[in-house]
Image (cartoon, rainbow, N blue to C red; front, side, top):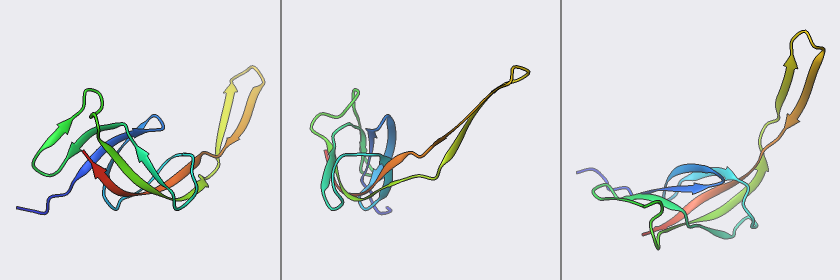
Length: 108
């Protein structure tokens, strides 16, 4: 008889995240300013400890609301391509943009 924790699996930016109320998560960059509330409508699964609802593919009418905490960019990565014995080398850098979210509400 533990604490019942509501969670949802949402899809955004081509990735899926398991979120609960109060969680902080970094997702692909979303439009909006820090302090604004965004809605993530693609909810795939909702669970509340006892009952689990699974969408087909999404749950109709369900959404997750989250507050934008900040925007930023990740650490730089190096993309290096090389073909041996052909004198072909290419180096490229990349920094991925992200949005930091804090989940405020899960509605089913």
